[in-house]
Length: 451
Image (cartoon, rainbow, N blue to C red; front, side, top):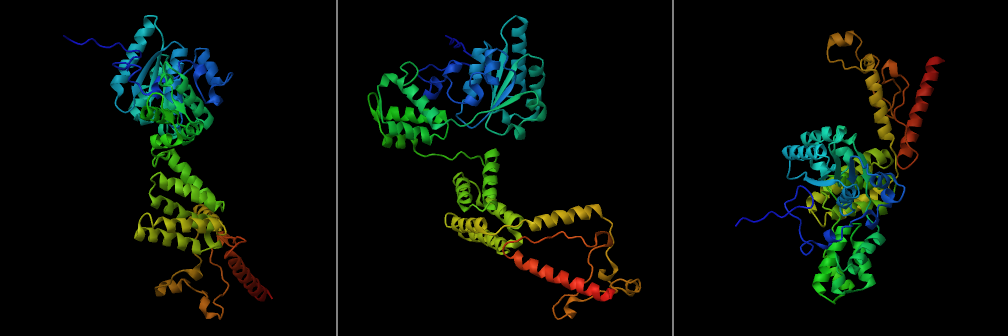
């Protein structure tokens, strides 16, 4: 006898799991906006997003935020509050043919006087260009309302055409207080939560779970459920039980995504800002998240030249030496030269004079691409070239006891231009003295010629 198909609550899924089989995080999903915890910057009374939802005109939008901050829940609430059909779409397993089916069904419902459709695309950043383009016409002509959810920066992952037709709302990690509120609600709710288990939970244990969740409500509820299953009905959840249920706190870090660049930027800016404490912290965050240490070494080597430069020429040498030491030692011992390098670079005197000089020289080179090399510093390997004046008047610096003879090395168009100006700190103080002495020699010789 053929099995009856279980009816679906929302289009696009074959069945809806029963309450008994759903995890706690799914069972505790709020049914109305007022039950939603957190994201006050978006959902407080009078805020544009809440106002558009309550007026029933949400428009297409993208929810961007870390895991467990309520992106999917909020999409469900938009659909239920505005009485629209909620159709989920997987950016991982489904493609353009499925989008065409959803659009056709949505159009059919409208033609029959039925409700509008919300197409919810989880992990929308995983859609390829063709899939993203296929969403443009139906979201533009009102056939459906698109809601996307992503943990990645939309400006990097979503094409401009689709991005310009949606509003982007940024969801923040939940506060410890918000997560604790959700945990208490789950413990008290006898219908959807754990209320019937009559658990005894230490306040410290609850606080610990909330703090260790890193703003991720789903993670916190999963840990609470695991602890509840472990102690059983009427059991006591202590801090020790909570710690066992948590097992390991994983760093929120994506080596290929926006968080990678945020942390790398924080590391560089801490080095530049002469803060060894911050630099060490962001270094440790990246290492703990699984970052390749070579990424840190590459940034540090570049930073040594860009932000320290000639204020401490040893900085570049130490950065390169630390990288080589890591290659020889490997982790974890290799993390020591990485930390030593980080502290050295953060505490070194800073100067970006080399970068300023490079930028100025490149700009001048592009503005005067045909400026001829002065005759006296041209190469003269043949007799003809010597007859033409190549190398004539060149003064060999080592012919002077102090290895310096004033002469012009820039083309006429740039005569007198100064690209490099030494900074006031570290080794550049000596460089400044040397440049000043050479400039004085030039002025003396110029005075002799004129007299």
